[in-house]
Image 1 (cartoon, rainbow, N blue to C red):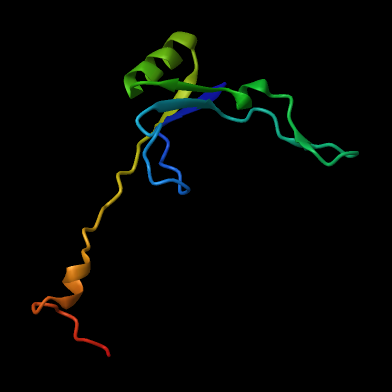
Image 2: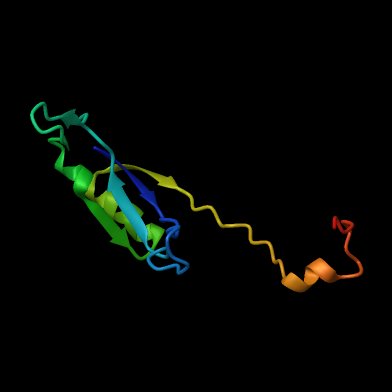
Length: 101
């Protein structure tokens, strides 16, 4: 039984950062998924795939995994590199690129 501990990224559908400060412990797939021959649904007998535990900090998630005897790996979050761009910068006299029109 293994799991991964990570901090989820913000969703692309919203501009807010809700639930991005929480750490998630998610179990890895132990059994392969099967396709039902009659209905075509994808199913699995592994119930732990449906389980996601949230924690306030990475240390709490790691402590839970150690206490429960769960083999885990931590995926470090990637901080976005923000570039500050303003509309008036298009008209500055110190502009490095010449006008194209």
